[in-house]
Amino acid sequence: MALLRCLFILLTVLLHHRNAAVVAASPHHGPAPHDYRDALTKSILFFEGQRSGKLPPSQRVSWRRDSGLSDGSSIKVDLVGGYYDAGDNVKFGFPLAFSMTMLAWSVVEFGGLMKGELQHARDAVRWGSDYFLKATSHPDTVYVQVGDATRDHACWERPEDMDTPRTVFKVDPSTPGTDVAAETAAALAAASLVFRKSDPAYASRLVARAKRVFEFADKHRGTYSTRLAPYVCPYYCSYSGYQDELLWGAAWLHRATKNPTYLSYIQMNGQVLGADEQDNTFGWDNKHAGARILIAKAFLVQKVAALHEYKGHADSFICSMVPGTTTDQTQYTRGGLLYKLSDSNMQYVTSSSFLLLTYAKYLAFSKQTVSCGGTAVTPQRLRAIARRQVDYLLGTNPMGMSYMVGYGAKYPRRVHHRASSLPSVAAHPGRIGCSQGFTALYSGVANPNVLVGAVVGGPNQQDQFPDQRNDYEHSEPATYINAPLVGALAYLAHSYGQL
Image (tube, rainbow, N blue to C red; front, side, top):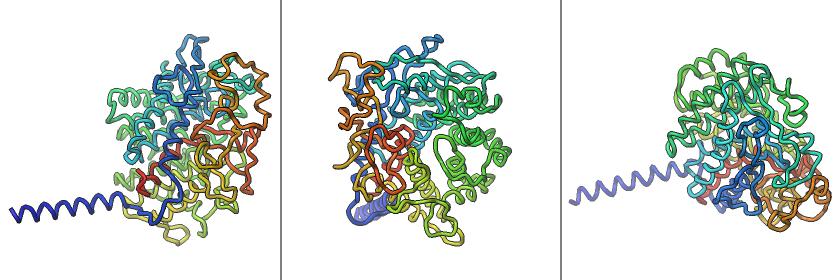
């Protein structure tokens, strides 16, 4: 009995150390600079404020109501649901598909750390993937936008009051849109991984649709904003072409199916599709950097030797963001914020931070580092760079301001967002007309409805933020800003023992 007891104690100790090692893969000493768990909760809640369609009983953002209930009826297709991508009332399929791919990736990589927030994150992914199943219900067709953007932007009205045309735009063999179709395939494939264990039948449906949509994207090639320019530009033109989306879509289908067909596709087409291009801005338009890191995982973690060169492609992108190395190509503000563009810069902060943390995870698993101009960069260094960006976003910055609405004591109060800036239906049951709402746009008062969790475009290059509602470049939130942040916050909350 004594021997058995000793063996039991020894086994318990070993298991404890093993679990501790897993949990403390990147231990942080001292108090956490932020409540990452609170920020995680709010970053997911934001998506409920963006919902279009018939809201469920579980809806937590109570000042929103049903909207867009006739979407698609003009062409006899059910396109009710999905999300408004930012502060207006148009459903733009291209950035929304990227948002859903990144939200799903956040759950795939870090969902195991989310605990009580995991179901909310899954619900947010499902709300988007349900819509994309509708948008791809007809073979060789993807419905890529609902709403006339020009007419919508000529109004400032609540989604519940919309009376602008809900025109539907699509891509098909005669109006190709490889970029938006391949991104939609990526979103469906990524979502299938989220539900593989919890709802395998739904996951199978998603991956089957992803395959079909990707085949259409690859077969009928063309940039969607070529034919649809009057309707999708200048809002969401596809400036980078469609090669990045084909590589990205193939990478997600490879990960979701493990089908050697997609591995062959990547091997045969990778270079033509820009696998080694030095385009280091990852966002809704250009997916090359994300595709490189996603494919590098197959080499680093799954040991797919045929994809070894993607470690180098991924390293190249990562090294471009490491300050103090000869490979650093990234501009930072004096306050330390990664700075790419004046318009909605925070989207690049969140997407780059997510890639840094995700690649650090893959490197740590395979016990590798990155060589940046002869300097060995560890996973811990990559995590520190990412954490600095997230901390800046949450308030560790020259303004002492959180750029997430509802987080911290000081945050944006005049967000460029129609539903948030106008009285809710509960507070003002009467309709607010198209032009009536502009009074609110130019008003200096705080938004009456707090869009909790929304991350705005962020400060300017001088680390300043005027908090003006009509300044959409800095004050508008978007789904593609929040989506990658969800995964980053889950990792940080876990690493500080908050989850």
